[in-house]
Length: 258
Image (cartoon, rainbow, N blue to C red; front, side):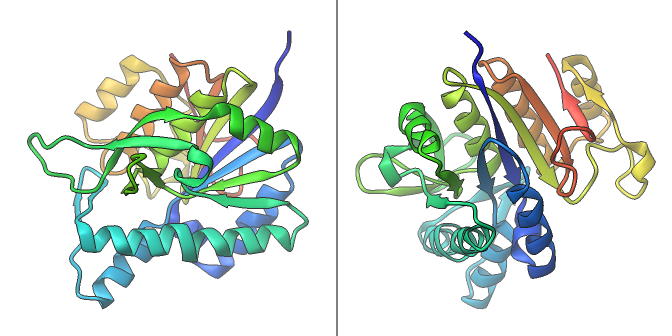
């Protein structure tokens, strides 16, 4: 039986945190036909607000170390400020959006990342996704707008990388839908030179990925993005694309393949 198609779009914080780029992105997202989910970041806003509160932001390889104070900040920013601005903007565009953290409807359960070389603090590694509840919501015409927060089932929220949220969500609903996962940010794809739009890399497989990691082309926040892309493809997701926020129709960008 052919599955119905769904688009899961993950959008970076910078795009949804600035009004001009947010409005343009929401226009594009609202125009996507059929079933869809939006997963958003918000890291720049969290860093700015934390700084104003005298809370230092610590990052390792594009991922945030989250102590107790930072957890309060990201909960306010991701689950509140950024998420609800997106939901309100989509409602104005006649998209029946519903903002979710992992705790809502127990959609994303996680555990606190164990301390090894680095103590990540209140960072969650996803254990399970309730694809069935998402499927039921989506089939009633609701468009989930997912913040990068999970929970441990014991009353604690956990900060979880938005790229991971997108990949885990895609994996969790792959049994119900034919899933295309699109990571969009401010560049047209993965590029050899971020200053040169013509240097886009149209396709990345595992061999190319190793070379790009070794020579430093893939670094920072792009590292977890592509790791999550491969993980999704190995677990039932049909397509993964990395592209610019105004090209979410799948015709442009970097395609990740296995």
